[in-house]
Amino acid sequence: MKTMSKVALSVAVVGFLVTGCAMLNSGSVSDESLSLRRTAVQSEKTVKLAKVEYTKALPGEAKVIERSFDNAPPLIPHSVVGLVPITIKNNSCLGCHSPAVASSVGATSIPKSHFVNFRPIEVIARNGKLIKKGKIVARPNGGSNDVYATYTKNKLYAGRYNCTQCHVSQSDSKLLVKNTFTPGYRSKSDMQKSSLINNFDEGINTIK
Image 1 (cartoon, rainbow, N blue to C red):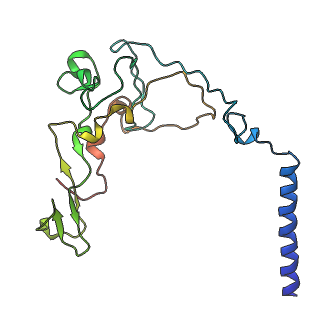
Image 2 (image 1 turned 30 degrees about the horizontal axis):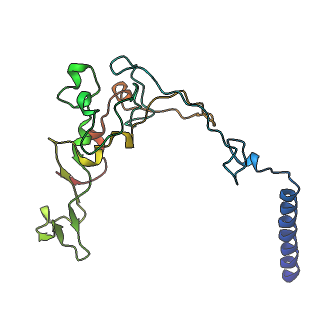
Image 3 (image 1 turned 180 degrees about the vertical axis):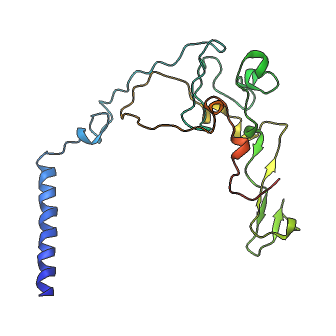
């Protein structure tokens, strides 16, 4: 009886697969229906990207855009013509957004979190010893699960230097899929300003 049940089940599965393949071969599911752009997925030759208009407002004249969610990288509300690309020798964003000048020109200041190096230079070796800059050093407080971080508060951290790796320009792009996400913020000020420096290490035992 058990053998017959297994045979019946196998026949049913094979039948389902054959039926499914037949439906695909019959054209009931087209290539175009698999793409949000409604074009064939095998070829890009006929694909025409939608025209995107980026904001042309000048710095200081643009409306600050509400963040997508708490501590999300904000969109760039003004034109970036002449300001990009950012190179190792030149970052035009710093001219207005550096903390020393931001308030005087009415710009949003680079947040304190951008002056923090979250990549630890202290690591725990497999033998449980603390390695700092290639040398074994004493463990602070004798802890075994500590998280070690390095802070540079007077200089923009190199990992945050390339602004456009996270921040993009505002555009009138039309969404292919309706966005039903409702953002939440810790406070109203977080809609336009970062508070990440105050809560990035929540739940972590961090030695400063």
